[in-house]
Amino acid sequence: MSEWPGIAGIKLAPHTKPQLTRKGILYVHTDEPALAYEISQRYRATLLKRAQAVLGERTVKELKVLVGK
Image (tube, rainbow, N blue to C red; front, top):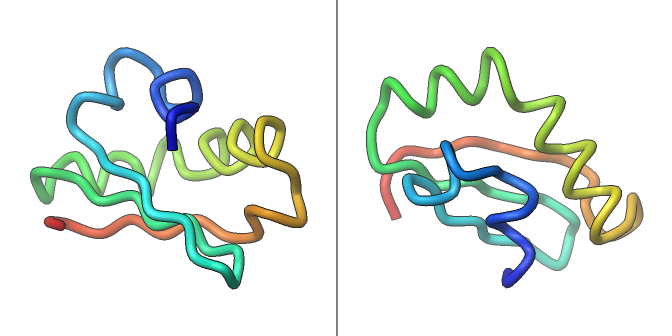
């Protein structure tokens, strides 16, 4: 997703990798557990709204955070 740096921002983009499924689930893979927790607790709703604004609500229905690739 070439749009990811604009969606995630300069703080999160270098430490995350997005994966969008055909079912509309946007998986955000992080490189450390603490960051995954922070995204889940603080940024999940914001990232989902940004992704939906850029890609469409029908394209991105849900956001899940995972540690690792």
